[in-house]
Picture 1 (spheres, one colour):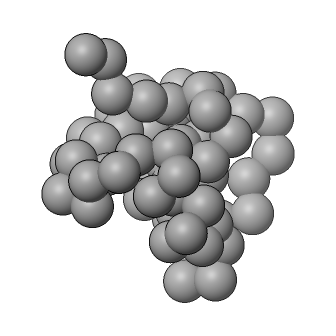
Picture 2 (cartoon, rainbow, N blue to C red; picture 1 turned 180 degrees about the vertical axis):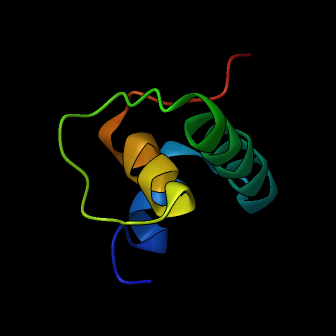
Length: 63
């Protein structure tokens, strides 16, 4: 996976484990409900799209 890079992702979320959980839950939601938060995605698969949302700042973990 070239985009988004792991460095960009870790700037948004410091824990790789939390990042994986966040992306997988969002990917499942995208697949089931077809609700997209960005206008255009580079990725084809839902997990890649979820990671793009993390990098863009529209998806994050609530504390």
